[in-house]
Image 1 (cartoon, rainbow, N blue to C red):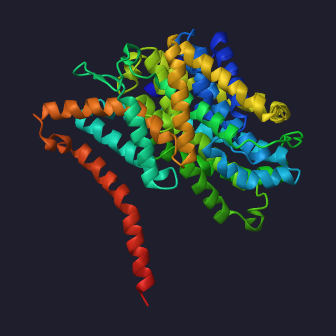
Image 2 (cartoon, rainbow, N blue to C red):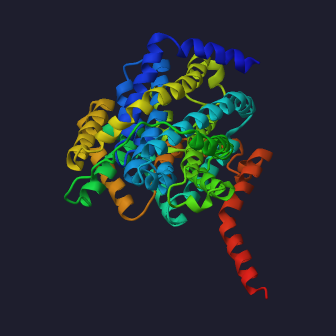
Image 3 (tube, rainbow, N blue to C red):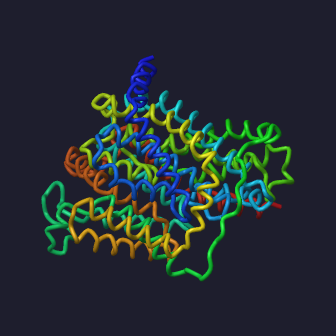
Length: 498
């Protein structure tokens, strides 16, 4: 009941004219940037982070919510129309959405995606309202060993499910942890990896890291593989669903959140896994299996609903534990820190107006997303006709201006370019970017919690496993590490059995 009362107060905050304006601006900006090829929600939020510096915190995070969901819908639009996913979570939408577009049903595919985002976002946010205060209440009793165990779980989980191999995931994580070490040691005050530069004593801002790895790295990668010619957008008609389409999509819309939300709430790598699971589930349950691979609308509706619910789920661990499980949550955590606000168990007590205003704005953002983007789908398609050289030149300019605005130092631009080159190298050798961002965000905090736990136990390693919670988490970590070996052993045993 307290959650409902707090949510009502949150709607009072979110529905003020100014905050409604920020929500609408966020949805439009997020979709406009997310609809561009190769740009996902994380890059959109990172690029637009400097835009919110002049706003008060509540308005800024309401705008972030609109950017987040708008960019997710934009990524699905490019995936469906051009077979160019704007983000990894939109890859599944291309499997069925692009064949639909090629057969002249792009409008229906976009409408199914928009409906999936709306249904998944609404259901996921309802679950967020129900579960976040409970998780926050339980998290108050979590100590340093428990926090460190959770962060280790986040590291292992995110490196296990992303990329073509675990080795590449761990290599990406080490890159992020190394960048996170730059600056003064928080406990001793000694400089680390600053190379004698006083300007690096405060470390490298997470915004610069995110923009460098995502925007600069992607722009350099595209430039290195650019070919002559332009990509023409496919025509998009009136994006409405017929009754037969609705009969085939409403069940996938409702099933998607049941798969997406749990994966978003735990450190499991974001929406990539639940979207694939949703696609497999819909393929098995559909009466139109013969259409899969040639444009089955269920294969768009279910995964998009799962992706949107997963986005709501990521906010549970981010708001209650201060743990970002996706790149977008990592950038949003950096935004909280810019305002001097630390997400965690006490956030709901210290900043109730901001938190519940943010949660209420998620409902508002879903409605605005549906109302604004369905009529504007043809416009987003026309944006894709911009020649790629001009497109990525604009991205480089915007990223450089945003990075310079963070600290006003010319060195920030040099650091941005260096990190962009690192991002280019990671793409060249198949290293996923998300573990590096997670390493930058959680690395310093994990080090602090580790050292704090060891101080409490007088240097004994047993101090890291002296609580039932930490032991349970390490058992989950061990299962994640050994599961591939167990799977191979079982498969080998089945093959040997006559």
